[in-house]
Amino acid sequence: MSAAIEFVFPAPAPAALAVQRSAAVFPVARVFCIGRNYRWTPGEPAPTQMPAWFMKPASAVCAAQGSLPYPPQTREFCHEIELVVAIGRGGRDIDAAQAQSHIWGYAAGLDLTRRDLQQQAKQAGGPWEPAKAFDHSAPCTPLVPVATLGHPRLGAVWLTVNGVERQRADVGELLWSVPELVAMLSRSVTLLPGDLMFTGTPACVGP
Image (cartoon, rainbow, N blue to C red; front, side, top):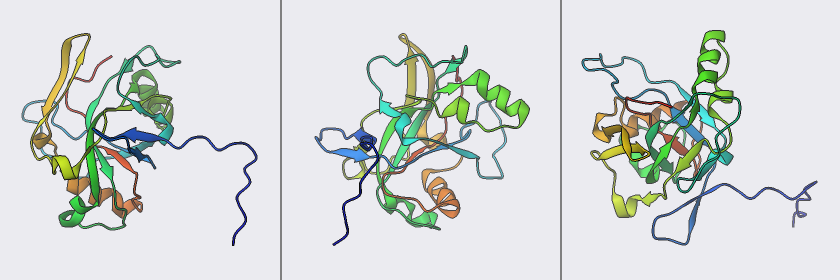
């Protein structure tokens, strides 16, 4: 029998996301965010390459309810509403045709962004973490299990700010589909149960 692990201080509580109509919670492993994945202008040509992606820490995930603290070091705090995919079965080099069998559920989430820091990073060729990976930067609604929802191919995702609609799109308008995105990520990293994937935001992001 192996000895119990002795931590030098108490380990932090694991990140978790609520599940709709359930007392159980979904343990969050990692958070992957897909870059631009909708057309932002009419007639925009279809992409020929898969989108870029970046990560946020699991600790950035929080419930999309109540008030959120305004983050430090920014004057341009921006919203990006997105369909969120929760992975329930891990794998590597997943075929897009089999990708749905790895999905546990879906939610809506915000990829909150310190846009001024992101623009500075782009100009300097630096990493995006200061702009994307801050505290409370990934609010999510409760997850809806695939067993309840199925795999949505159509359906609106939208955001209102102070009662005014800012963003709206249909998930059927994703330039790269959810199965294609799961397959793409799994070619780069081994996906784990508990991983979340933000699938990209439609037009009209703003502060």
